[in-house]
Length: 129
Image (tube, rainbow, N blue to C red):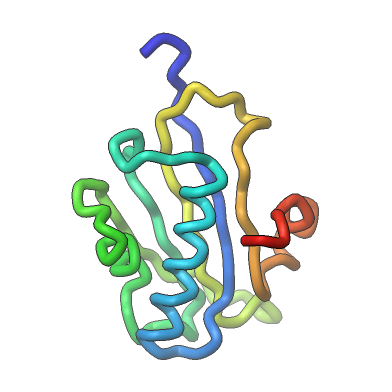
C-alpha cells in the first residue's frame, strides 16, 4: 500500500498486584485502549513487545494478547532493569504497526500509575478510557 509506514505505538500502565489476574487485567485494558484509539487491526501489526518491572513475575503479560484472540502476531516479553526509585508494578507495551498515519497522529496511552512517565501524553487520553 502506498504511503504505508512502520510505526511504534507506546503504552504503559500499572498492575494492582503481582498476581496473574492483576497483571492480565492491566495488560488487557492497556492493549485494548491502544488498539481502540488507534484503530489497529491485527493484520497490520508486525510484532508486540511487552515489558514488566522486576516485581511483576506471576504471568507473562503477552498472554493477554492471546486471550484477546491475537494468535498470528509475534509477541515477546522482557524484564525492565531495576532502576532505584523507578515505578513499581509497571507494564509497558510497544506495538510495531504498519499504517498510513503520520507520527503525530499516533495515540500513545499512559494510564493508572504510569501517567507519571509521560504526563504530556496521559493528559490527551479521553476520560471514557
